[in-house]
Amino acid sequence: MNDIERRVRAANPNPIPVRGAVSPRSEEELSALLASAPHPAPRPASRRPRRRIGTAWVTAIAAVLVFVTVIVAGNVTDRPAPSAAFAPPLLTSVPIDGTTGEILNALSSSASDIRMDDAEDERTVVYESWSAQITMEEDTVLDMYVQPQETRRTWSDDLSGSIVSRAGAVKWGTAAPDSAAAKPGTIILGEDFEPGTYPTFFVTPPPATVEEMRSYLAAPFGLGEQSTSGEWFKAINDLRVDWPLDRDQNSAILQLIATLPDVTVAGAVTDRLGRSGVAVQTETRTEGNFRYVLVFDSATGLLISSEFVYLGGLTDISLPAMTVLDYTAWKDDD
Image 1 (tube, rainbow, N blue to C red):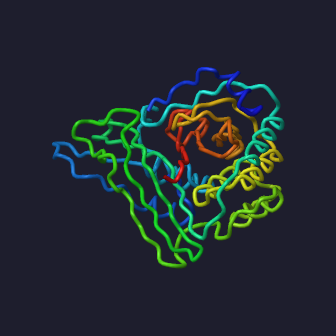
Image 2 (cartoon, rainbow, N blue to C red):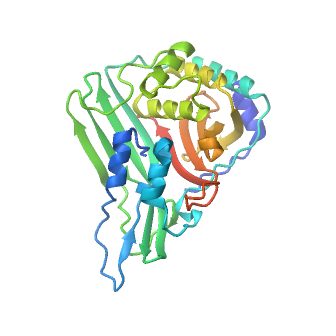
Image 3 (cartoon, one colour):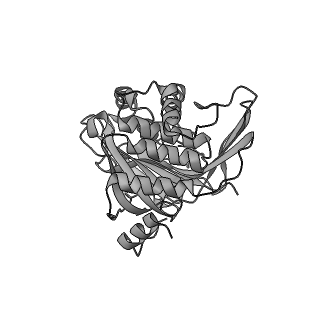
């Protein structure tokens, strides 16, 4: 047991059990998301029209906040504010001893001690994310529930590959008997990519030193000294969606985070898959209206999940404060 794991266990000896986007990856995907609504399975006819809101307006907010005014105009306003029942509950954190720098350094050292397999010219990343499903009849909410989905992204150096997402079991909220909830295991997205067409911001392998990692993450998004810590957190999330990180790459990310302003350690948490971790967070996007959270395994220091939370304060967004908009929990490639 390493030092950081001892601190986590001391802070949280009895972790709270789990109660149970894909995050859009570019401006083009956001535009497509706003332009098209989800396509649910047919529902029985009703005397009054029903509206299926689905996931678009929720995940769009979490995608590219520079477009928040577009998102508000196109997807959020003029709708009743839903209960937070359509979203996962907030993670519960327990403070742990040590400064932010000390904890990040300890996690970085743990990651450096982990042995990883040699990199291959084909890679697979598997993760769980979630979909909020909301069905309305006029202005009445008929059902709201969260149905996680598992996504498997496989791609090669020639930029060929595939993305397949399958429905999981409903975890939060209750689906009505006649709801369009997909049967667990159902393929809800499947796409193959010919060489040169796989969508990724990061074509070359991630570097293994902190300064190289800074330049690598900055290049696709134009990040620099003026960028917020939240923008760096999002870049890290986007990288992890497509690349399995080895020990040195993960360590470089932790060292980079340690140099960012306005970053705090929330404490020990249990992530959506029941794993013990350390949550690192920042509230620097759109002047503090959103919180970005990265969770690192307390034993290995490896990045295992991320969360994006709306904190409130934007009058044009009719969402309750402290609403989880997005989570991604990476899994082992079995």
